[in-house]
Length: 188
Image (cartoon, rainbow, N blue to C red; front, top):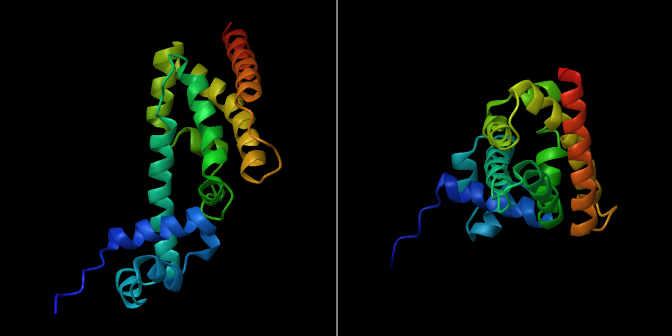
């Protein structure tokens, strides 16, 4: 009889992300993850002392996926493309979006703390490279555009608004132009 395949910590985290993606982060538990892996709950509980620890690991994995998604840029308009990717993520991955931005795992972070987080540094650097200007100016533009983009994405992820690429892109361009103009005015 061949040995049973070993269930790794990484496999468990991937299964938890899959549960979150399909049915929401609230449904991550030892039973649902074990079902995904077609195993007992024992490996899940062996690798994670608590389900809370598993959810935190799944959150980190989903956050990494989200960051990669944002930086998949196909346009020279980096700031606009990052914003559109954020909204597309909400449209394509509504359960993961809610896990990342509308759960208790995101709470406790202020907008100012978020803008200075090291996870956002590559995004801000790319935006600064594309737009020029000081990092402070880029941060001002980012905050304004982020609030616009996050509102759109939240409405879409919660089925309160349909995703219309052309309308959203047009409105995002206007928000970006306004934020850039305001940042330049403030610098004078």
